[in-house]
Length: 140
Image (cartoon, rainbow, N blue to C red):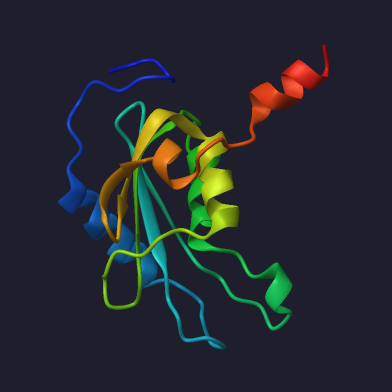
């Protein structure tokens, strides 16, 4: 396929949206009733997904993106190439700022996101992001 830092294939956005919708059906959202599912294409061709898991102590609620990144590492690692997130009706939604940061750290450069305003790159939805390279430079 490809190495961990690039992708040269096509993205099947319908397949990703279907995987996100399926993940959303497993969400645990008894408090907000706002179910979320996320899915991403990995650099080796796999699709990983996650759903939100709420908690009565709202601060420890897990976003769908958290589950997705956990599944990424549990299933073999790699880098995220393309990402989509949906609500309980299957409509595309934007990841919050915290989740954009989480996705950035696990993405190939130029990762694509299906957003409410069309396909965007990670740099467009999280410009001038802070990441591992910043920490490496600080350690020198």
